[in-house]
Image (cartoon, rainbow, N blue to C red; front, side, top):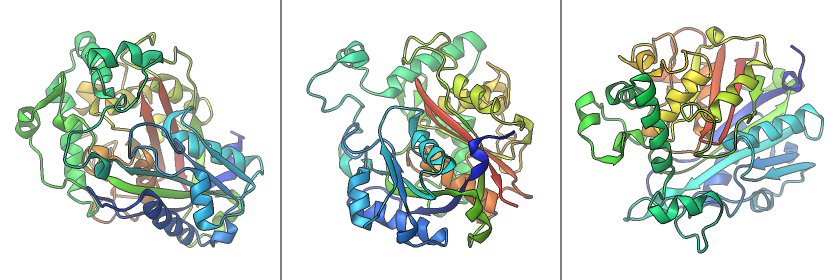
Length: 394
């Protein structure tokens, strides 16, 4: 299939230190990740002619947004032909998709994309902030949730999970196999935040956050930055490490852009983004060798498994039931670095970094057996979602 995606690759990846309360500035972490990605791509800062991020400066509670593109451009002294940053669009994936369109249409040759969080440091010794924390005036849809103490997306998405449980008979024991299996993968990832093994008993006995989510269904706030270079495909033969070819992107939102007014509360925006991605490629779900699927909450990962067609609608529970299918040696290795539940909440960009790592065969102890040819990556949940397919350059 001919599309702009055929003209785009990810040529380099980079990541700063990742940890709990690193007490380093967001721009410091971002520069580390950006320079690592530029070097990994075999480029210099002078080669970078585009820059993109999500969500851009000022979005969300403290530690959530990271530095905006003007600050990073100035820090690196970039001369760009194209730049973008903003919170609206197909979730965290919007920066990468925007960059790929800029490269595919010739506006830029090498775009620096990055996502930086310092949520753990900003949290300090207190509790985790909700999305509505610190907003002086509540408007929009938040006026119907915040006054009722539904401060967090955990509260909103718990209702979706409950609906899935009711409609399809999904159980906590089934849902728990996602964080349990990912914790096993994290044990093989030296950069993961939580690496100790987790049993089903550990999962079920952890404190409840909002039914049916317990502590281990929620991702772990960290400090860190992830960067990647989106390049024109004609550069791929010259990269020091194998590039990842962009096969297709998924961006559609065909239902209501709402947390609680979507037409099917068990699917949300993942349904439409996934459908539009498969419409843009001849590849099928059975071609995918590894899946790096957003796990801000474990239920979102189950939604993506169903939306992307790895199992039927409502069959996510049985699909993950014993963890075998989603293990490193299973039919669909899932979140091979531990995901955000154990490796830390890098807000979706960690999944893209891991997909490229797996395609290159650089996963070390957590590398999926055999050659990984196709990787699916998904970001977001609720009313915001985006996804893409990557393949190994050859």
